[in-house]
Image 1: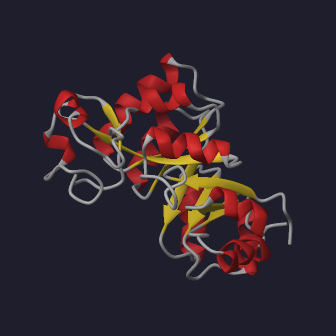
Image 2: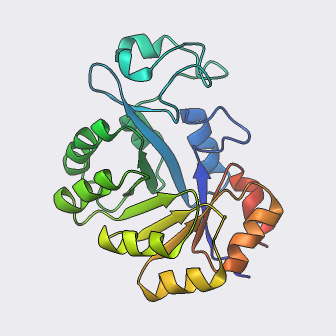
Length: 227
């Protein structure tokens, strides 16, 4: 088992801080994460907002779809411990780590693409998504930016689709993931980020599979579990 496996902070350090907030991302960096994972939606007035769910109900004191609220309206909401829903720009400015930018809302991609160019983020972000159309658009418009194909369950089809999309990473959930499939990914030139590594057994399992990275809610603990 290698301690060289990358530790990716899932929505920051969501196991100990309110997820997808500046507080969570700063904590993940402080706790030794190698990269941050976050989720992108678009406000009604076209701002890139960081939230996992399409609806506000679970992680804020608001209700209903995020996409129906303006930036100003979203800023009035409490995202946990007094934190506000951050913008993508704010996370870029508040942290220094590489970022896995998961595009949840397909319509958020054009704005993200513009920001990658404007802020010269080619060497800082990896664009990831469950949505193949997002990765296809990224392949056309931002070919120099690494892409990651996310799937809930690993399979040989995942590998084939990732290759078609020109992805640099596959980001599979643990179901179906085997050392043999990881090796096949490596042979195809794909890196593997397994998830979720939220306890010692999960993190060690990712390492034993040969994964290049593990996404975890607990970056500080994950680092110690690999020692």
